[in-house]
Length: 83
Ligand SMILES: [Zn+2]
Image (tube, rainbow, N blue to C red):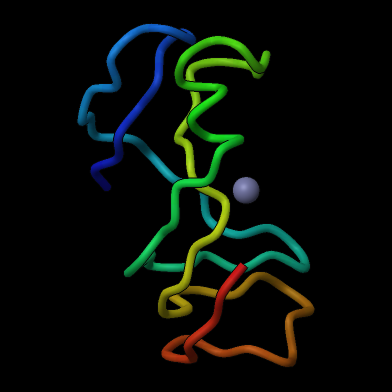
């Protein structure tokens, strides 16, 4: 999948192809359709809030469940969700 990747705080993000692992037990993978960008994301991007890098910013997303891991019973592929 393609994502805006921040290599280091204060540097420009670049669009890159990243690999997403299959979901593990209790996890789901979501095909993100919309994602907000909050002040925490902006602070990480400008380097004033420390975070491990490289990182894909955005933690207020919604989309379609793509795959579910073992033990997930309340969501199925095709369901809409948000986090
Ligand atoms: Zn936030």
